[in-house]
Image 1 (cartoon, one colour):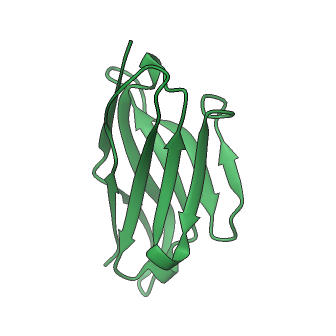
Image 2 (image 1 turned 60 degrees about the vertical axis):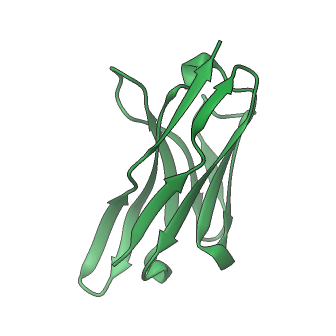
Length: 120
């Protein structure tokens, strides 16, 4: 069974930085890509950034120039480095594996989320 666990959220002042971690456990060999999503209060969940097993990355406009997604395959962990944070970045950040290969087929996974609060 594969699980995703986020950590690293917290309270930070505007202009500050945080690094979120998404640790995968279990049969992680079937994970081909990891996304970071976020959901602010009263808003829909939105994609922040993605990274594939080969290392290619993709960023939403909200993240370009400020956020960096990376992965440490030895630790089965994906990171989201967030710099120059703004109050509008306040949200619950979720780790997402859109298509995990398992013996019984494909599985979509979400982590439990980690809260990021940016004060002005």
